[in-house]
Image 1 (cartoon, rainbow, N blue to C red):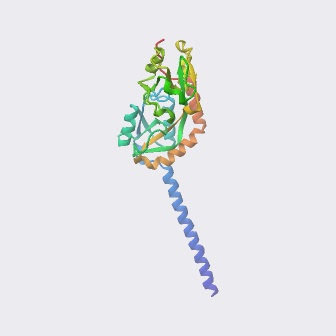
Image 2 (image 1 turned 90 degrees about the horizontal axis):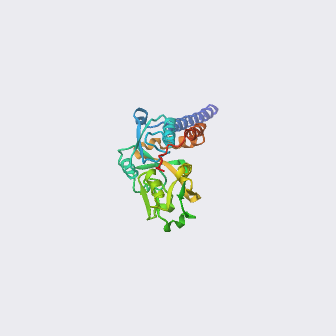
Image 3 (image 1 turned 180 degrees about the vertical axis):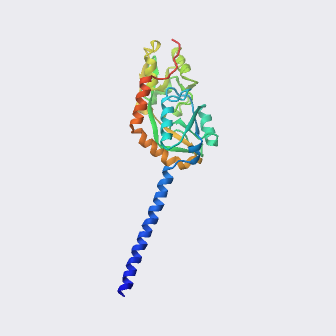
Length: 266
């Protein structure tokens, strides 16, 4: 009886030990799967596209966000290729699987309209938009209905402005600022950094700039769903790098070099 009890105890301990080993094996495999990027992005660069948005995404792919996106993907061992396309085409081509992803959009993208897109949480970059003009400006986003508004085609806007029916979409910053100069629009909506860059130029010294908390924009990376297995590691990379010295160094370098923004003729 004594020997039988010993064997029973040993059997229970062995069973518990085997269960622990099995659990640890499965857990380690899960962690490995969550931290290992898709094999295709290790061998072949992923192709991303976005609408032209200097100084964030520029023609030479050297904008601040271009550089930050490369940093995020290199953190998980992936390489990317960035090209420029119109906003709606970028979303459509990514949804069709012709592109691997896009990145100059906020959460205003309706996933129901693009069922093959995956949004990576959290937002990788945030900035404020500004109301700019040479006259009186709206005191809030709720007063815009009486103003002639313009922004750049493809620019992500807050939800409170998306459905506004009277926003003219300029093809680029040159056209947008020219419309202001010629009094063709009352208000141009642009990123705050861009607005203050223009205010430093001789013909924009009298530019009025107003910023409200409602004009904040959070940008997200969107992937085609075939890359679902890098969703978790990519999100972890965004969280880590947004608080890193690498991000701060990238931002400080961009500020020192100056903004790569086209100038309108004064």
